[in-house]
Image (cartoon, rainbow, N blue to C red; front, side, top):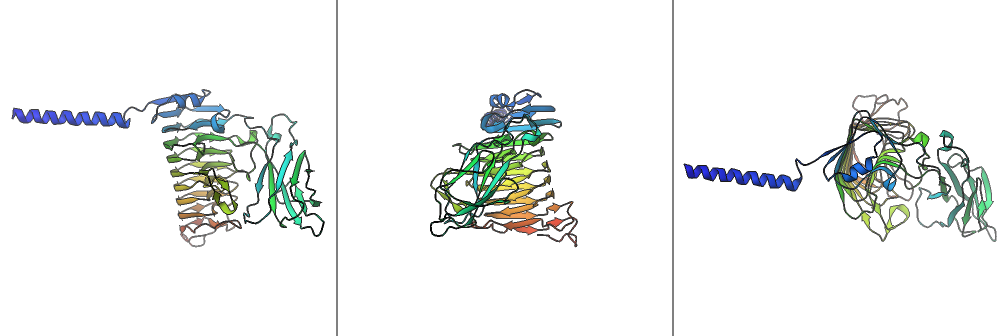
Length: 432
Protein backbone atom coordinates (compact mmCIF):
# COMPACT_ATOMS: atom_id res chain seq x y z
CA UNK A 1 0.00 0.00 0.00
CA UNK A 2 2.86 2.38 0.78
CA UNK A 3 4.18 1.82 -2.70
CA UNK A 4 0.77 2.66 -4.17
CA UNK A 5 0.60 5.87 -2.13
CA UNK A 6 4.05 6.93 -3.33
CA UNK A 7 3.07 6.22 -6.92
CA UNK A 8 -0.14 8.21 -6.51
CA UNK A 9 1.72 11.15 -4.98
CA UNK A 10 4.25 11.07 -7.79
CA UNK A 11 1.47 11.15 -10.38
CA UNK A 12 -0.26 14.05 -8.62
CA UNK A 13 3.01 15.96 -8.43
CA UNK A 14 3.66 15.35 -12.12
CA UNK A 15 0.15 16.50 -13.07
CA UNK A 16 0.51 19.67 -11.03
CA UNK A 17 3.88 20.37 -12.63
CA UNK A 18 2.41 19.92 -16.10
CA UNK A 19 -0.47 22.25 -15.19
CA UNK A 20 1.86 24.94 -13.83
CA UNK A 21 4.09 24.74 -16.90
CA UNK A 22 1.03 24.89 -19.18
CA UNK A 23 -0.31 27.96 -17.39
CA UNK A 24 3.06 29.66 -17.64
CA UNK A 25 3.28 28.98 -21.35
CA UNK A 26 -0.29 30.08 -22.09
CA UNK A 27 -0.16 33.11 -19.84
CA UNK A 28 -3.42 32.08 -18.09
CA UNK A 29 -3.57 33.56 -14.62
CA UNK A 30 -0.91 36.17 -15.36
CA UNK A 31 -2.97 38.85 -17.13
CA UNK A 32 -2.78 42.20 -15.40
CA UNK A 33 -5.26 45.06 -15.37
CA UNK A 34 -4.13 48.58 -16.28
CA UNK A 35 -6.48 51.39 -15.26
CA UNK A 36 -6.65 54.60 -17.29
CA UNK A 37 -8.01 57.63 -15.47
CA UNK A 38 -9.78 60.48 -17.30
CA UNK A 39 -7.16 62.84 -18.70
CA UNK A 40 -4.37 60.23 -18.66
CA UNK A 41 -2.88 59.49 -22.12
CA UNK A 42 -4.00 55.94 -23.04
CA UNK A 43 -1.27 55.00 -25.54
CA UNK A 44 1.63 54.76 -23.03
CA UNK A 45 -0.53 52.59 -20.77
CA UNK A 46 -1.35 50.19 -23.59
CA UNK A 47 2.26 50.16 -24.83
CA UNK A 48 3.49 49.16 -21.35
CA UNK A 49 0.91 46.36 -20.98
CA UNK A 50 1.91 42.78 -21.74
CA UNK A 51 0.20 40.67 -24.36
CA UNK A 52 -3.08 39.36 -22.98
CA UNK A 53 -3.44 42.10 -20.36
CA UNK A 54 -6.54 44.23 -19.91
CA UNK A 55 -6.59 48.00 -20.35
CA UNK A 56 -9.57 49.65 -18.64
CA UNK A 57 -10.92 53.15 -19.26
CA UNK A 58 -12.45 54.31 -15.98
CA UNK A 59 -15.69 56.34 -15.94
CA UNK A 60 -15.30 59.96 -17.05
CA UNK A 61 -14.24 61.96 -20.09
CA UNK A 62 -11.08 60.75 -21.86
CA UNK A 63 -10.55 63.54 -24.39
CA UNK A 64 -7.41 63.30 -26.54
CA UNK A 65 -5.89 64.31 -29.84
CA UNK A 66 -4.64 61.85 -32.46
CA UNK A 67 -1.50 59.80 -32.02
CA UNK A 68 -0.05 56.82 -33.86
CA UNK A 69 -1.54 56.08 -37.27
CA UNK A 70 -4.08 58.87 -36.78
CA UNK A 71 -5.85 57.17 -33.89
CA UNK A 72 -6.48 58.02 -30.27
CA UNK A 73 -5.36 54.49 -29.36
CA UNK A 74 -3.38 52.20 -31.68
CA UNK A 75 -3.28 48.43 -31.02
CA UNK A 76 -0.66 46.03 -32.36
CA UNK A 77 -0.66 43.15 -29.84
CA UNK A 78 -3.15 40.82 -28.11
CA UNK A 79 -4.97 42.98 -25.59
CA UNK A 80 -8.36 43.41 -23.94
CA UNK A 81 -9.76 46.93 -23.90
CA UNK A 82 -12.71 47.75 -21.68
CA UNK A 83 -14.65 51.02 -21.59
CA UNK A 84 -16.54 50.98 -18.35
CA UNK A 85 -20.01 52.49 -18.05
CA UNK A 86 -19.62 56.26 -18.07
CA UNK A 87 -16.24 56.20 -19.83
CA UNK A 88 -16.17 58.37 -22.96
CA UNK A 89 -13.17 58.16 -25.30
CA UNK A 90 -13.50 61.38 -27.29
CA UNK A 91 -11.53 63.09 -30.05
CA UNK A 92 -10.53 66.56 -28.88
CA UNK A 93 -11.88 69.67 -30.60
CA UNK A 94 -9.79 70.83 -33.55
CA UNK A 95 -7.75 67.63 -33.87
CA UNK A 96 -8.49 67.54 -37.61
CA UNK A 97 -8.10 70.91 -39.34
CA UNK A 98 -9.24 71.27 -42.95
CA UNK A 99 -6.73 70.45 -45.68
CA UNK A 100 -5.88 72.73 -48.61
CA UNK A 101 -4.95 69.90 -51.01
CA UNK A 102 -7.69 67.94 -52.76
CA UNK A 103 -8.12 64.20 -53.20
CA UNK A 104 -9.40 62.92 -56.54
CA UNK A 105 -11.96 60.15 -56.72
CA UNK A 106 -12.71 58.58 -60.11
CA UNK A 107 -16.40 57.87 -60.58
CA UNK A 108 -17.88 54.67 -59.20
CA UNK A 109 -18.54 53.49 -62.74
CA UNK A 110 -15.16 51.78 -63.01
CA UNK A 111 -15.37 50.42 -66.55
CA UNK A 112 -12.07 50.21 -68.37
CA UNK A 113 -11.17 52.12 -71.50
CA UNK A 114 -11.84 55.68 -70.35
CA UNK A 115 -9.14 58.31 -70.66
CA UNK A 116 -8.17 59.36 -67.14
CA UNK A 117 -5.74 62.28 -67.36
CA UNK A 118 -7.33 64.58 -64.79
CA UNK A 119 -5.30 66.47 -62.16
CA UNK A 120 -6.22 68.87 -59.38
CA UNK A 121 -3.98 71.62 -58.06
CA UNK A 122 -3.92 74.99 -56.40
CA UNK A 123 -4.81 75.49 -52.74
CA UNK A 124 -8.37 75.39 -51.52
CA UNK A 125 -8.89 78.65 -49.63
CA UNK A 126 -12.58 78.66 -48.74
CA UNK A 127 -13.14 79.34 -44.99
CA UNK A 128 -9.50 78.71 -44.08
CA UNK A 129 -9.33 82.23 -42.67
CA UNK A 130 -12.00 81.36 -40.06
CA UNK A 131 -11.26 80.56 -36.45
CA UNK A 132 -11.90 77.07 -35.13
CA UNK A 133 -15.60 76.56 -34.75
CA UNK A 134 -18.55 74.66 -36.20
CA UNK A 135 -18.61 76.85 -39.34
CA UNK A 136 -15.15 75.56 -40.27
CA UNK A 137 -15.99 71.89 -40.49
CA UNK A 138 -17.31 69.69 -43.26
CA UNK A 139 -15.99 68.69 -46.68
CA UNK A 140 -16.43 70.47 -50.00
CA UNK A 141 -16.58 68.29 -53.11
CA UNK A 142 -16.08 69.53 -56.69
CA UNK A 143 -17.84 67.55 -59.43
CA UNK A 144 -16.23 67.59 -62.90
CA UNK A 145 -17.94 65.87 -65.86
CA UNK A 146 -17.04 65.68 -69.56
CA UNK A 147 -20.14 67.02 -71.32
CA UNK A 148 -19.11 67.14 -74.98
CA UNK A 149 -16.55 65.48 -77.23
CA UNK A 150 -14.70 67.86 -79.52
CA UNK A 151 -14.72 67.44 -83.30
CA UNK A 152 -11.97 68.44 -85.68
CA UNK A 153 -9.67 70.89 -83.92
CA UNK A 154 -12.22 71.68 -81.22
CA UNK A 155 -11.44 70.54 -77.69
CA UNK A 156 -13.64 68.44 -75.44
CA UNK A 157 -15.65 70.45 -72.90
CA UNK A 158 -16.51 69.86 -69.26
CA UNK A 159 -18.97 71.12 -66.71
CA UNK A 160 -18.33 71.55 -62.98
CA UNK A 161 -19.77 72.58 -59.64
CA UNK A 162 -18.65 72.96 -56.03
CA UNK A 163 -21.95 72.56 -54.22
CA UNK A 164 -24.29 69.60 -54.20
CA UNK A 165 -22.89 66.40 -55.73
CA UNK A 166 -23.51 66.16 -59.49
CA UNK A 167 -24.79 69.75 -59.53
CA UNK A 168 -22.65 71.34 -62.27
CA UNK A 169 -23.95 74.80 -63.17
CA UNK A 170 -20.72 75.85 -64.92
CA UNK A 171 -21.01 74.27 -68.37
CA UNK A 172 -19.28 74.10 -71.72
CA UNK A 173 -15.77 74.86 -70.44
CA UNK A 174 -13.27 74.00 -73.20
CA UNK A 175 -10.26 71.93 -72.14
CA UNK A 176 -7.03 73.88 -72.75
CA UNK A 177 -4.47 71.28 -71.67
CA UNK A 178 -3.14 73.76 -69.10
CA UNK A 179 -4.22 74.59 -65.54
CA UNK A 180 -7.73 76.06 -65.44
CA UNK A 181 -9.04 77.82 -62.33
CA UNK A 182 -12.46 76.85 -60.97
CA UNK A 183 -13.12 78.62 -57.63
CA UNK A 184 -11.63 79.19 -54.17
CA UNK A 185 -8.10 78.65 -55.46
CA UNK A 186 -8.84 75.23 -56.97
CA UNK A 187 -7.32 74.48 -60.38
CA UNK A 188 -7.71 71.46 -62.65
CA UNK A 189 -5.85 70.19 -65.68
CA UNK A 190 -6.43 67.60 -68.41
CA UNK A 191 -3.29 66.39 -70.16
CA UNK A 192 -5.21 65.84 -73.41
CA UNK A 193 -7.56 68.34 -75.04
CA UNK A 194 -9.54 65.58 -76.75
CA UNK A 195 -10.30 61.88 -76.49
CA UNK A 196 -12.42 61.83 -73.33
CA UNK A 197 -15.63 59.82 -73.09
CA UNK A 198 -18.73 61.92 -72.58
CA UNK A 199 -19.99 61.42 -69.04
CA UNK A 200 -16.55 60.68 -67.57
CA UNK A 201 -16.68 61.93 -64.01
CA UNK A 202 -14.23 63.01 -61.32
CA UNK A 203 -14.72 64.30 -57.78
CA UNK A 204 -12.17 66.48 -55.96
CA UNK A 205 -12.67 66.50 -52.19
CA UNK A 206 -11.48 69.10 -49.67
CA UNK A 207 -11.95 68.30 -46.01
CA UNK A 208 -10.07 66.90 -43.04
CA UNK A 209 -7.81 63.87 -42.89
CA UNK A 210 -9.13 60.59 -41.53
CA UNK A 211 -9.26 59.98 -37.77
CA UNK A 212 -9.93 56.86 -35.69
CA UNK A 213 -10.85 56.17 -32.09
CA UNK A 214 -9.30 52.72 -31.61
CA UNK A 215 -7.32 51.36 -34.53
CA UNK A 216 -6.10 47.76 -34.84
CA UNK A 217 -3.46 47.46 -37.56
CA UNK A 218 -2.24 50.05 -40.05
CA UNK A 219 -2.86 48.01 -43.19
CA UNK A 220 0.52 46.75 -44.37
CA UNK A 221 2.13 45.47 -41.16
CA UNK A 222 3.94 42.19 -41.82
CA UNK A 223 2.77 39.98 -38.94
CA UNK A 224 -0.80 39.27 -37.86
CA UNK A 225 -2.26 41.24 -34.96
CA UNK A 226 -4.67 38.92 -33.21
CA UNK A 227 -6.76 38.20 -30.11
CA UNK A 228 -7.93 41.76 -29.44
CA UNK A 229 -11.23 42.61 -27.77
CA UNK A 230 -12.96 45.94 -27.27
CA UNK A 231 -15.88 45.71 -24.86
CA UNK A 232 -17.80 47.41 -22.11
CA UNK A 233 -20.65 49.87 -21.66
CA UNK A 234 -18.68 53.02 -22.47
CA UNK A 235 -18.68 55.27 -25.54
CA UNK A 236 -16.31 56.26 -28.35
CA UNK A 237 -17.11 59.77 -29.63
CA UNK A 238 -15.32 61.02 -32.77
CA UNK A 239 -16.67 64.54 -32.18
CA UNK A 240 -17.58 65.17 -35.81
CA UNK A 241 -19.12 68.55 -35.02
CA UNK A 242 -15.78 70.05 -34.01
CA UNK A 243 -13.37 68.35 -36.41
CA UNK A 244 -13.06 68.65 -40.18
CA UNK A 245 -14.44 65.55 -41.86
CA UNK A 246 -13.12 63.81 -44.96
CA UNK A 247 -15.46 63.56 -47.89
CA UNK A 248 -17.35 60.29 -47.93
CA UNK A 249 -15.96 59.72 -51.44
CA UNK A 250 -12.27 59.49 -50.52
CA UNK A 251 -10.17 56.45 -49.71
CA UNK A 252 -9.83 56.90 -45.93
CA UNK A 253 -12.68 58.12 -43.72
CA UNK A 254 -13.31 58.35 -39.98
CA UNK A 255 -14.38 55.48 -37.74
CA UNK A 256 -14.69 54.88 -34.01
CA UNK A 257 -13.06 51.46 -34.54
CA UNK A 258 -10.89 50.51 -37.53
CA UNK A 259 -9.65 46.94 -38.12
CA UNK A 260 -7.17 47.09 -40.98
CA UNK A 261 -4.74 44.68 -42.67
CA UNK A 262 -3.35 41.44 -41.24
CA UNK A 263 -5.67 41.33 -38.25
CA UNK A 264 -7.62 38.32 -37.00
CA UNK A 265 -9.66 37.04 -34.06
CA UNK A 266 -11.10 40.41 -33.08
CA UNK A 267 -14.19 41.09 -30.99
CA UNK A 268 -16.05 44.39 -30.60
CA UNK A 269 -18.88 44.07 -28.10
CA UNK A 270 -21.26 46.21 -26.09
CA UNK A 271 -19.82 49.68 -26.64
CA UNK A 272 -21.64 52.75 -28.00
CA UNK A 273 -20.21 54.73 -30.95
CA UNK A 274 -21.27 58.20 -31.98
CA UNK A 275 -20.51 61.40 -33.97
CA UNK A 276 -18.48 59.68 -36.67
CA UNK A 277 -18.57 58.80 -40.36
CA UNK A 278 -18.64 55.06 -39.62
CA UNK A 279 -18.81 53.27 -36.30
CA UNK A 280 -16.78 50.15 -37.22
CA UNK A 281 -14.82 49.51 -40.42
CA UNK A 282 -12.86 46.37 -41.24
CA UNK A 283 -10.97 45.50 -44.40
CA UNK A 284 -7.70 44.18 -45.77
CA UNK A 285 -5.09 46.12 -47.71
CA UNK A 286 -3.23 45.65 -50.98
CA UNK A 287 0.00 47.21 -52.24
CA UNK A 288 -0.66 46.55 -55.93
CA UNK A 289 -1.89 49.03 -58.50
CA UNK A 290 -5.65 49.48 -58.36
CA UNK A 291 -7.38 48.76 -61.64
CA UNK A 292 -10.97 49.35 -62.84
CA UNK A 293 -13.63 47.18 -61.28
CA UNK A 294 -11.57 46.22 -58.23
CA UNK A 295 -8.75 44.31 -59.88
CA UNK A 296 -5.14 44.74 -58.77
CA UNK A 297 -1.86 44.50 -60.64
CA UNK A 298 1.21 43.25 -58.78
CA UNK A 299 1.68 43.92 -55.09
CA UNK A 300 0.84 41.92 -51.98
CA UNK A 301 -2.45 41.26 -50.21
CA UNK A 302 -2.77 41.85 -46.46
CA UNK A 303 -5.92 40.07 -45.32
CA UNK A 304 -8.17 40.40 -42.25
CA UNK A 305 -10.30 37.59 -40.82
CA UNK A 306 -12.42 36.29 -37.94
CA UNK A 307 -14.06 39.49 -36.73
CA UNK A 308 -17.16 39.69 -34.52
CA UNK A 309 -19.19 42.87 -33.92
CA UNK A 310 -21.94 42.11 -31.46
CA UNK A 311 -24.42 43.90 -29.19
CA UNK A 312 -22.97 47.34 -29.92
CA UNK A 313 -24.87 50.61 -30.36
CA UNK A 314 -24.32 53.13 -33.13
CA UNK A 315 -25.96 56.52 -32.53
CA UNK A 316 -24.92 58.39 -35.64
CA UNK A 317 -27.77 60.44 -37.17
CA UNK A 318 -25.47 62.22 -39.65
CA UNK A 319 -23.30 59.26 -40.65
CA UNK A 320 -23.22 55.52 -41.27
CA UNK A 321 -22.45 52.42 -39.20
CA UNK A 322 -20.66 49.19 -40.13
CA UNK A 323 -18.45 48.82 -43.24
CA UNK A 324 -17.31 45.26 -44.00
CA UNK A 325 -14.79 45.40 -46.86
CA UNK A 326 -13.73 48.38 -48.97
CA UNK A 327 -13.20 48.98 -52.70
CA UNK A 328 -10.09 51.10 -52.10
CA UNK A 329 -8.41 48.46 -49.92
CA UNK A 330 -8.23 45.38 -52.06
CA UNK A 331 -6.97 42.96 -49.42
CA UNK A 332 -9.45 40.23 -48.59
CA UNK A 333 -11.76 40.08 -45.57
CA UNK A 334 -13.01 36.73 -44.32
CA UNK A 335 -15.45 35.44 -41.73
CA UNK A 336 -17.16 38.51 -40.28
CA UNK A 337 -20.14 38.48 -37.94
CA UNK A 338 -22.18 41.64 -37.42
CA UNK A 339 -24.99 40.44 -35.18
CA UNK A 340 -27.45 41.72 -32.57
CA UNK A 341 -26.49 45.39 -32.85
CA UNK A 342 -28.66 48.50 -32.61
CA UNK A 343 -28.08 51.49 -34.87
CA UNK A 344 -29.52 54.91 -35.72
CA UNK A 345 -27.92 56.37 -38.86
CA UNK A 346 -28.48 59.04 -41.47
CA UNK A 347 -26.73 56.96 -44.13
CA UNK A 348 -26.22 53.24 -44.84
CA UNK A 349 -26.31 51.23 -41.64
CA UNK A 350 -24.59 47.94 -42.58
CA UNK A 351 -22.55 47.57 -45.76
CA UNK A 352 -21.01 44.24 -46.78
CA UNK A 353 -18.61 45.43 -49.47
CA UNK A 354 -15.74 44.48 -51.73
CA UNK A 355 -13.61 41.33 -51.23
CA UNK A 356 -15.70 40.08 -48.31
CA UNK A 357 -15.93 36.29 -48.15
CA UNK A 358 -18.11 34.67 -45.50
CA UNK A 359 -20.30 36.89 -43.34
CA UNK A 360 -23.32 36.98 -41.07
CA UNK A 361 -25.63 39.96 -40.59
CA UNK A 362 -28.17 38.64 -38.10
CA UNK A 363 -30.70 39.97 -35.62
CA UNK A 364 -29.87 43.68 -35.94
CA UNK A 365 -32.31 46.52 -35.21
CA UNK A 366 -31.87 49.35 -37.71
CA UNK A 367 -33.22 52.88 -37.78
CA UNK A 368 -31.78 54.58 -40.86
CA UNK A 369 -32.59 57.44 -43.21
CA UNK A 370 -30.43 55.67 -45.82
CA UNK A 371 -30.10 52.03 -46.74
CA UNK A 372 -30.54 49.52 -43.93
CA UNK A 373 -28.34 46.69 -45.29
CA UNK A 374 -26.60 47.32 -48.60
CA UNK A 375 -24.57 44.48 -50.13
CA UNK A 376 -22.48 46.64 -52.44
CA UNK A 377 -19.88 45.34 -54.91
CA UNK A 378 -18.51 41.81 -54.89
CA UNK A 379 -18.95 39.87 -51.67
CA UNK A 380 -19.92 36.23 -51.26
CA UNK A 381 -20.99 33.48 -48.86
CA UNK A 382 -23.21 35.71 -46.75
CA UNK A 383 -26.29 35.21 -44.61
CA UNK A 384 -28.60 38.15 -43.86
CA UNK A 385 -31.43 37.12 -41.55
CA UNK A 386 -33.79 38.23 -38.79
CA UNK A 387 -32.96 41.92 -39.15
CA UNK A 388 -35.60 44.50 -38.24
CA UNK A 389 -35.92 47.92 -39.81
CA UNK A 390 -37.82 50.33 -37.55
CA UNK A 391 -39.27 53.87 -37.73
CA UNK A 392 -39.90 53.67 -41.48
CA UNK A 393 -43.42 53.74 -42.87
CA UNK A 394 -42.40 54.34 -46.50
CA UNK A 395 -41.78 50.70 -47.34
CA UNK A 396 -38.02 51.05 -47.78
CA UNK A 397 -36.25 47.73 -48.33
CA UNK A 398 -34.31 46.06 -45.57
CA UNK A 399 -31.75 44.51 -47.92
CA UNK A 400 -30.40 45.86 -51.22
CA UNK A 401 -27.94 43.86 -53.38
CA UNK A 402 -26.21 45.60 -56.32
CA UNK A 403 -23.02 47.24 -57.58
CA UNK A 404 -21.89 50.23 -59.67
CA UNK A 405 -21.37 49.78 -63.41
CA UNK A 406 -18.13 48.05 -64.24
CA UNK A 407 -17.94 46.20 -60.91
CA UNK A 408 -18.71 42.54 -60.33
CA UNK A 409 -22.01 42.39 -58.42
CA UNK A 410 -22.30 40.73 -55.02
CA UNK A 411 -23.17 37.08 -54.75
CA UNK A 412 -26.73 37.21 -53.36
CA UNK A 413 -26.67 36.31 -49.67
CA UNK A 414 -29.02 33.84 -48.06
CA UNK A 415 -31.95 35.95 -46.84
CA UNK A 416 -34.74 35.14 -44.42
CA UNK A 417 -37.11 37.02 -42.15
CA UNK A 418 -35.76 40.53 -42.73
CA UNK A 419 -38.66 42.83 -41.85
CA UNK A 420 -39.60 46.47 -42.06
CA UNK A 421 -41.55 46.84 -38.84
CA UNK A 422 -44.09 49.36 -40.16
CA UNK A 423 -44.34 48.10 -43.73
CA UNK A 424 -44.39 44.31 -43.53
CA UNK A 425 -48.05 43.39 -43.92
CA UNK A 426 -47.67 39.81 -42.74
CA UNK A 427 -45.81 39.22 -39.47
CA UNK A 428 -42.60 37.36 -40.19
CA UNK A 429 -42.68 37.95 -43.94
CA UNK A 430 -39.40 39.07 -45.49
CA UNK A 431 -39.02 42.48 -47.05
CA UNK A 432 -36.04 42.52 -49.37
